[in-house]
Image 1 (cartoon, rainbow, N blue to C red):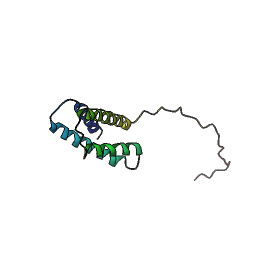
Image 2 (image 1 turned 135 degrees about the horizontal axis):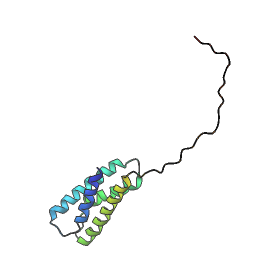
Image 3 (image 1 turned 180 degrees about the vertical axis):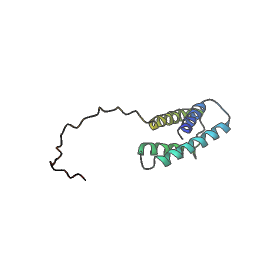
Image 4 (image 1 turned 45 degrees about the vertical axis):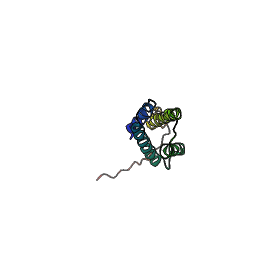
Length: 117
């Protein structure tokens, strides 16, 4: 899934160029699909990403803006959001905390008489 996010982001950046209408139909399908996958994954965990990608899903499905400069701006923003979401999925290295030694000494009760079998 992670690499599909990068592909969708790159497709958004390629959408800035003047291309045939078939590419933009493909772009709308791939961005809508990735938005839907992210919506399903983030439904209960992170509300910011959930709301953001619901808006992107709505924007790329039924709405068609006829002006190319508006779509250039939208494609850039969505491409950057997808890249930022991808980098938020990468686990960060945790700094190792120095090990602490328990200094409290517990006395073990010992008896003198032992039963040996």
